[in-house]
Length: 363
Ligand SMILES: Nc1ncnc2c1ncn2[C@@H]1O[C@H](COP(=O)(O)OP(=O)(O)OP(=O)(O)O)[C@@H](O)[C@H]1O
Ligand SMILES: [Mg+2]
Picture 1 (cartoon, rainbow, N blue to C red):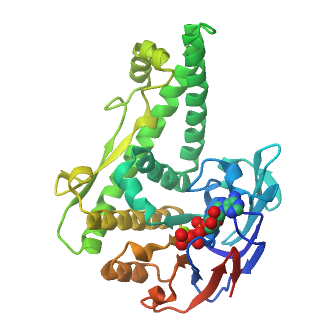
Picture 2 (cartoon, rainbow, N blue to C red):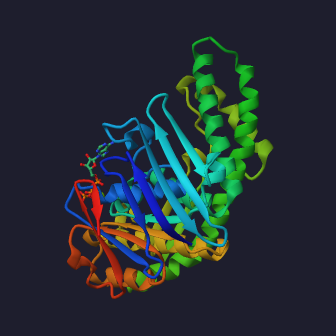
């Protein structure tokens, strides 16, 4: 799939922008000094793919300080072309998603444009934060499997509702038996999420092992293992029982302790846990392998090549890995940001170069 047109207004520091994307080219580079709006541009495209930002959970942050709303529109060319639109309004605070001019829910919207985002921040995120390792699974699965996205959204809402209720019970404002409905939801949805994640990890395992070897140019064996918070439980009633056994602890803390919202991933090289033993270069190779696995799985399972968003990757990748990246992205529509034009010299395809200055994008 490819993007053929981008229209942005009122978004972060970007000036109103309309870009017609050249059909004949596949690499689009945005060059500019620090703080001029390069990442913002990729963030805008990402929003049209996943309806959420990769760097803020507060939608209002996306609106320019001096504006009341922002809109991003991406036209996507594929078998069944679509115009995707994200609108964020300050007052009353809301986010509206549209497909071909018609309002749609997040689950109807996500996945119409498929995108893989890669930034140097992925490195520290993968190395230090379980939440962001879970996000890798969720972002990938949401683009692969529509049912997963629906289940995940219901699950997240159930956790919110259950946690609110737990606090009310703790304050003596509600009764314990009101939890029954939510416990049931959690057990059912939580089990589906766990199973789907486990299946994905089996598929990732072989892919990642091969990718890691060729990216790191070693014979090191990378393994990924799923640290499921519910352990080996594979039966809804057993999970429900475990949830109810823990109810007093949940009430005391006002949070739900058991379930896939507490999952994690573990990466090892030659059986040594990367969190404790890996070098920065090894994390770099891992992150690159994860991104390529993402691209390959999306392409294999959906028949659609995702759009690639590469944010300032040159600062983190040495020449060998840059070369690998450039070789692998050939033929994929890629939006790439960098501070220095020379960084693109290794990329021997024809590219369209834009300059980003003070929020204005010009060719
Ligand atoms: N809601 C907003 N309204 C106006 N400006 C904003 C808003 N959110 C962020 N900005 C500004 O956008 C500017 C550009 O941010 P961006 O992250 O895109 O820069 P960049 O070109 O990627 O820089 P770097 O090379 O350092 O990564 C920042 O100065 C930031 O303060
Ligand atoms: Mg940036």
